[in-house]
Image (cartoon, rainbow, N blue to C red):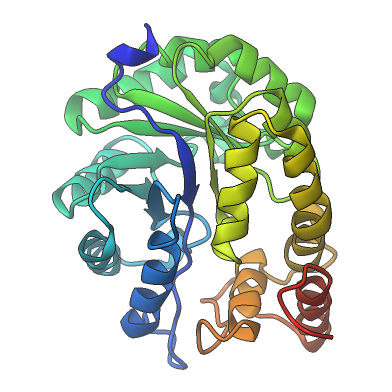
Length: 317
């Protein structure tokens, strides 16, 4: 199916936002509004993803997800796209999708429904993947972004599965959080003329992905100094490899290490907590608290985040 027949075409940067909490772990909607506005109102940002992995979707109630969407809808600028993460299998996924649609989402970021031990091998089965997305297509009828996990997750979609579900009109994009440049190249070559391919990696292979070919990015790390990430994605989309390489080397690499440990975590500390900690140190949110069972930052992680922010030029040493 040609891309121009899709229900939505995405281009550019779509940051995935966090959900700030108060000391009692209730949602801090005032801090959230500031966070959403600071991110969305950055020139060049094409939309936001809320209620996704970085926003702790597994720890949010339906009422909280609804309120987050309503707030984001009020804050977004005309023409910007509101993307909502959804999670679940079968009727639960439909329910989450309809909640997002009724609350104002323009598109869905569909977390992998096969991320459960008995179902993991089904992500490799094109018929199973197609059946799931066709169900959402018919019962929710909203543009969908497929979340492709890394192969070590055990539930990454096979290339054959991605190609098959790409024929569904409401499957408009793939968030290629695939972990390696090799896998990204395979996804790009198979799908770039069928739907939007969004790079999504918080570690050094991101540059290789961007320079091979990219329509945009849907990435959580981009809430940390969003203007610089807009520059990076724009440079890559415009074929300016020299500029993209410089931004990636001088800015992105220290942030990737300082906040995400290059996606090779050394402890149980939550990556979400580390992203929040970076925003705390930049004066943008009050605290870095996450809801259990996720683990809050330690003093050593605070120091590691700070070193990354200093190395990237966001803080003074």
